[in-house]
Image 1: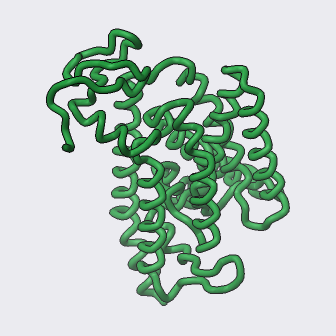
Image 2: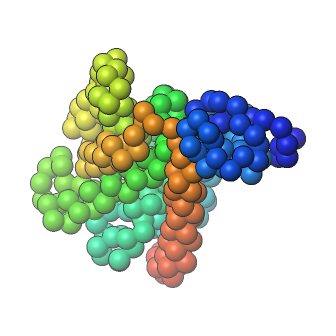
Length: 288
């Protein structure tokens, strides 16, 4: 049964029983706790309500699409094994100082986190996402996790683009001319766990988040090609966003609407990237 039309269900915010058609949960105040009867379906998808599998699947699809779009430009050497070409990544929404400041493609701060630069890159990021996302979904709920994930990607790629544009001459912390990857949003999830540990007084959670953050920072300084500003910007974005999404309070209806808005805006940004990027992509491919 996809949609429950009568009876009771568990409020996704506080866990108390509510009527499927109740306009508001009497315990936590969440509006429309039955989610139009689809609450049980979302609950069966897990604590993240299916968002993490959706992100993983979408990243894999976009990675394959970016390879197929320019098969002659695929890289096959070393850490860049099976890397999409630059023009292909540009088409689908890579961010950085060149797309944002050079071409005015400001919406790419929403799309770049769904693209990846190599097989190793996507494999490492999706494995990290699986490890980090579960506790975030547990502490914040699925809707707030979507908001944190999206906002962190925006702040991470915005920081990378701005710092490369204005401080691109500096070593290690110069940002990216073109940058992609889910790691900015993953660092945002780590930032949200760090905030949760401070807010809830859970030293174990904050220490684990701190260790993850330090490992990523050290890795970024010793491995070439890592976008440190995207990581730092994503962590900061996740931490700040979490302060406005108090994890010790139940999720509300506006959190659900905010999560839907994040996904919708990302879809629109992808459409804009392809529509406005196609002429340049076609010109670059045809000029070879």
